[in-house]
Length: 619
Image (cartoon, rainbow, N blue to C red):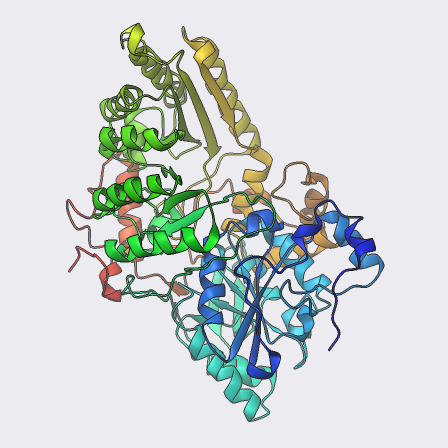
């Protein structure tokens, strides 16, 4: 087997050699003689971003606890090394062993963001594996996709052998055992894919046929293989306290985007924001035991040497053990001189006491997700925050010693008006005015309020999956309205407004609700030079425009078009537990600006109780 450790000469030519050398603290090296299956886990972006991803760390730890499996890692080579590898025909290699990816049994690629799709092709291409699954031989690794974007895998279905729908802790053992059984029987690649198709949560795209209506909408989506299921049911961890978690996460050599210990305290969310895909696909809510969280916190800090710890969940304020866990972290992390980074918390449930005590250790910035500038629009999106709640929460932060706060907003929501847009600046202005009601001797300098807005993208399995999306020009015009209104505020010197890239948002929208007809355009864009599209300086709109034109892709069909609730959607074959009936009901309530109470207040019968376990009030 060829070993591919890069020479010093090559490493000296690239920007950050530490991205490629492996051997980090807590990385796992096994003896090949002791393992049956080699698995490479991939995050299709640069090392610093990939090393910040909790899901990769969880799966890496879980797979390496299996004595017969060695899981390694690979990330997208930055363009400097990419160029060298192509020029010298160096196949992509795993960090731990430096062995070629093409010699592995599995390549698992996490699908976190639609704008990484060309990087997926970069990974497969540099690994010297055929880009299209139908062209792969029995000697090529099985390529698996998983993660949030796998809930509509159709735009990239042609490039994957299978997709894992759901949480990774559930059926990998069963999948690996099927692979070993097939190999022992000297079965073919197709034999294994048929075995995999019978495992709950596994989707094999080539076992399905797609047909379209004259108007471009889906006509049918049907299995063409007897082993393939009509519907793919997502996999859910029901006992979240007992699931494996990495006590010794890999510590990067260079500073990662999130360079700290992360405690995942909960999955799922009770809130039901109508634009939020994660809130739907991770239902039902499941909490991790507080005592287990305490143990993990101490172990992970000791095993990594990180100087900061944070909590991870969709809505940390709703974690029932938050007061007890926070009390423990304040005490224990204070002894270790470890900073506690507060996650984004709901303003209406924020604890002044916690803020003040965390500040005593090391001051952290505070970020609040308001999402919309007007109360009416917050009812449309089911945010459940009144203006009074927001202002009260911000005031508590000011009284706790903060004078810098950040607010997240989203522009382009369904039913949005100009008054809603202006409300963003007006809300920030009122919060600034509130700050200056504090006696001068009790303030810490001038207030600084930063408002950031992303642009709305309708996502699968949300009540807004049927909504029309704004055009790029509409997004930019709305951002200009907001920015212009900020300039009219009395406290404008204390207010900052930033907004996301509209062109990237449109691309995200195309892929989020796309179908298999997009694959040839993605392939062409990659072959013509598109990579790292999520990086604004790398994004090349003209190449994408040409690819769409060459393959007769109508951008408005995928973005600026409201769907009928009767339309067959590309992801309708996936069962996430949350019913389509519930999503339609929420779509209708949104148009009436009606709030749906959170799960603790009143069960809405979404369907998530079908999984059992967790904290589901539907039962």
